[in-house]
Image (tube, rainbow, N blue to C red; front, side):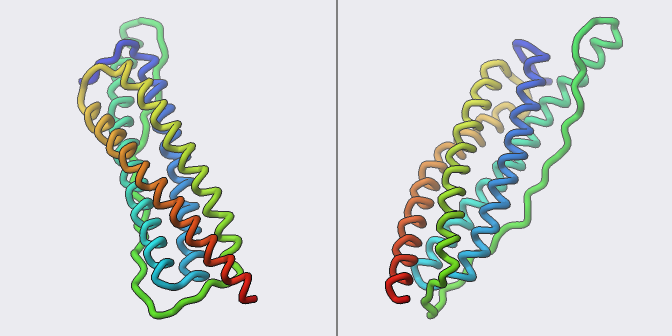
Length: 201
């Protein structure tokens, strides 16, 4: 059972949050995976290992957040659709939404192992630009998810999965400050590594 102040608006809010988290979250995960693979090939050393593994942790957290949030919101949306279908069969007007599908986690990234190697190839300069883009994409994702979740929670008063959405949102928002710090530190470290590589060349 789920309760909304405005049932049809609730469906639209669930659908919009689901679509946003799924599409933007998947894009962010894909870009983090590309960045991880590039950095792993172009940047080696103690600093590189630390920062690449922090990217792995960020990827893991987003991966879990996307799947759990989408599935919780899909559950609520599907319950709304059931009510809408009953309403329609009773002859009342109003929209009938579509069922939203389950979302599975992507394959997880593996932490890189410590290495005695140390190098930074010229391609790392392009990796730095990718990292800047990922930082902007992450900031946008966090803001949009926060705003959409707030709107949904103002309308969704009770029911199964509501607390999970709230908990996931709060945990992710709290983690996001730490993740932003990690991304900034990775940018700084990679910038220094690229600058040092340029001087050597």
